[in-house]
Each structure stands twice: as C-alpha cells, then as structure tokens.
Image 1 (tube, protein in one colour):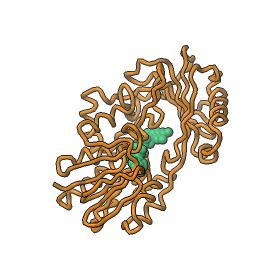
Image 2: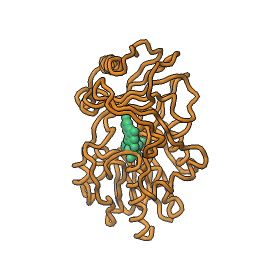
Image 3: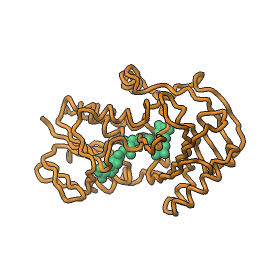
Length: 327
Ligand SMILES: Cc1cc2nc3c(=O)[nH]c(=O)nc-3n(C[C@H](O)[C@H](O)[C@H](O)COP(=O)(O)OP(=O)(O)OC[C@H]3O[C@@H](n4cnc5c(N)ncnc54)[C@H](O)[C@@H]3O)c2cc1C
C-alpha cells in the first residue's frame, strides 16, 4: 500500500488523511501536543475558549455533505447568534443569524471536529518536522533528530510560510507558496463570574484595533462559565506581534471596554494568544499544489483564501487530484 506522510493536524491535514485513509497507509505529524491547529480550544477551568476559528460556513455541496455526519452526531451545530456590526464603537448593523446564511460551530467546543476526524488515524503529536530528504523514498526528520522513513508521498498541511520553509525549492509550486502571505491576529480571552448585559452574541468590528467580539459561552452546547472572545484586527496584530503580551492585552481590554460600553478589566481570567499566521493576506484561489514527479503536495486554508471551508476544500481538491493518479 502507498505510504503517505502528512505534516500538520489542523483541519486540512486531518481532512486529507481522512479522505485518503482507505487508499493509502497514512501517518500524520503534528508539532503541538494535540490536534486541531487553528480550530482549537483553550481550557482554563472553569473557562473554555475557542481562541482560533469562531464559526464556519458551508457554501459548497461537498462541504455540506462532509459535515452531515458531524451534525447528525451533535458534533457540529448551527449557531443562531444575535449579530451586530460595529463601526468602531457604533452599531451599524443588526441581525439574527437564524434568518441568515447558516454559521456552524463544533460542540461543545470547536476542537471536537478535529478530534473526531483524528480518531483512528496514526497521529504523532509533539513532533515538529524540520526537514525532508529523498533517496528512494521520502524521509522526514523531526527537531529531536528522529527519522521517519519510507514514505512514497509527503503532503504538507501547514500555513504557507511554514510550508515554504519545509518543502524543497525543487517542489514545482515552491515559488507560488512563497508568494502567499499570511497575517497575524491576537485572541483576547476573558472569563467572568457574572454575565455582562450585552444584546448580542457575535460582533464584527471595523475601523478599530479589534475585528471580532463574541460571547463564547453562549455558543450552542456550552455549559461553561461566562466568557468573551475578542480578536484584534490584522493590522494591529501585524504591527504588534512581537510586543510585550501584557501591553497588548491591556490595549485590547481598553478597546473592548470602550466599544461595548462595559469595563471588562474586571474579568476574573484574562489572557492573550498571538497567532503569527492566522489568516490569508489576500483571498486568492490557487491551483492544486501537487508535484507528481517529486511525489510532494501541499494543502491548507491558504490555498483557497483562508477560512475553515477553504481548508477542507483544498484537501478535497488535492484528494480528487491524487485519486486521478490512481492513488
Ligand atoms: C484567530 C483566528 C480566527 C479565525 N476565525 C475564523 C472563522 O471565524 N471562520 C473561519 O472559517 N476560519 C477562521 N479562521 C481560520 C481557520 O482557523 C483556518 O482557516 C483553519 O483552521 C486552517 O486549517 P489548516 O489545517 O489549513 O491549518 P492549521 O489549523 O494552521 O493547521 C496546521 C497544523 O500544522 C502544524 N504544524 C505547523 N508546522 C509544523 C511542522 N513543521 N511539523 C509538524 N506540524 C506542524 C500546526 O501546529 C497546526 O496544527 C481563524 C483563524 C484564527 C487564527
């Protein structure tokens, strides 16, 4: 059976592993201590935060079909949030997502989707792959110097700047990947013992150092203590990604308080996480990055303009291309 190494256990790596598992022997390598990547959840008892992706859409039939079993099993639910749009501190739009395009979330937390996909797969966590070598087959080397031999194919499912570092320059699409930029984002996590008197559960924010505010604990299926999840704008994060985290946190807390009109500095739990590669700089659609000669491929949200659905769709497109090669 063909042996395939997949680097990265976010949604794209796990999706391609899931799709290929009946046709090849799959091994997934993940640098973090668990799966899910940017579809992740942070626990700080009694608080729980989806600090990466907030929700996702399913606009294509293939993704709608893919998520049906998750919906049936209660792992994904539609989020019918009361939604507002802020222009800085002014509300300029209001609607209820029950009357709008469906938005979905993992239940009872975002990373359940990735955990479900990973079940039954051979995933090596805590394993950062640092280089690839090819003789008769592919050999992967991790940061501790361990070797993983005898792979016919290697698929990279990591953000584009990391894929550019990992994949050899001989890879047919190396220059394309180098040109795909990703932008940073900060996630501010706030936990409260008391609810805040807010009239919305989800908010986009424009013309501000913030881009998103949500009541995480009021997503479907959550039974946890009251939490707010705030994301910075890409511009703010790009300018401050290497700054002292305490200063970033205080700034984001002050902006949140000002915009929602409630002092959130009184939160019982506060922390900030910086994502260096959160989202695509541009929403572009790339070709399928498959090099048949080298038996190397790449997928990820960045191949299709970012977002959860893009991550899945890029894996699905790669799967179809590999099946055409009779893999
Ligand atoms: C703050 C934030 C908010 C977002 N909000 C939304 C949203 O509301 N809706 C939406 O649709 N999308 C959103 N997104 C984007 C969404 O999270 C991503 O599109 C999607 O999760 C990407 O999945 P992926 O598998 O392509 O990449 P990732 O999830 O980044 O997975 C890549 C994996 O590769 C691992 N890895 C990297 N390098 C190595 C290596 N050398 N060796 C081994 N493993 C490695 C990483 O640890 C990671 O687990 C958001 C993202 C962020 C960060």
